[in-house]
Every structure is written in structure tokens, then in C-alpha cells.
Length: 139
Figure 1 (cartoon, rainbow, N blue to C red):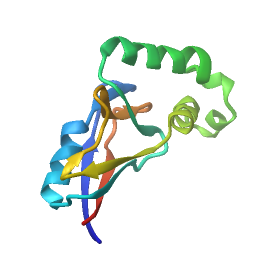
Figure 2 (figure 1 turned 90 degrees about the horizontal axis):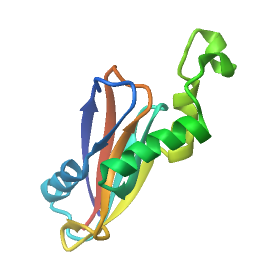
Figure 3 (figure 1 turned 90 degrees about the vertical axis):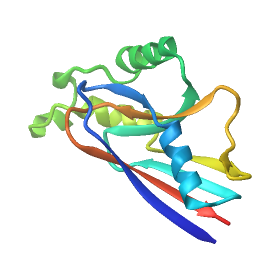
Figure 4 (figure 1 turned 45 degrees about the vertical axis):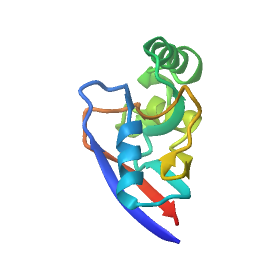
């Protein structure tokens, strides 16, 4: 088995953002020369996520609204974690809910995604430098 590692770096302008990274992931699969295997895409920060879903701005709005209204409202007074001097407990809970990584199959040298599936980086506490690991493995 061969492996190829690459890092994507982000420094979002907004505190929360959703970024389509599918083309970046596909480029690394191509660079790795792996024909059959998997690619692991993992946020290397505990206030960010990687997930697979539909590339549709209305859905992105719905995801952000769902996180705010039903998962972890951005209310610093609400969380014990924020009593340590931080204000990002909601971002930790959002990452825990969405997840920090995705595994995508590679078939015949390409990402094997469904017709509407894309790979996304979800930033829940941005405006500072963060990275995502892309690890392509296979033959």
C-alpha cells in the first residue's frame, strides 16, 4: 500500500464558514497516483469539521442555522468552558456534532462520490490559521 499526505491551510474571514474542498482533495488523489483505495480528510483542529454533503448555498444556510438554533447557540455565558477565558465552547460542540473527518473511496483513480456529494471544510471558530490533513492510501 502507498500513502500520500498533503495539508490544506485555512484562515477564514468569518468566524463560521463552509468551504467546498472537493477539488483540492481530488487533486491530491491525482497527485498520489492511487488507483484504488481511500482518502482520509481530517480537520486538525477541535473547532472545525470535515463532512460530505450537497453543494447548495441554501443548505449551507440551513446547516449554520440548525447549529445555532438547535445544537450549540453562540452564547458565551451558557457554557462552562467559556469560564476559562475562552468564548468558543459552541464551536467545540458543533465540531463534535458534525465530526472532524470523512473517508472517501477512490475508484479507478477518482473520488467515488455520489452525484450530488462534495467534501466540505466547516469552520466554527475561524479568523485564525488552521489546517486539514488529506491522506490518500491505496494501490
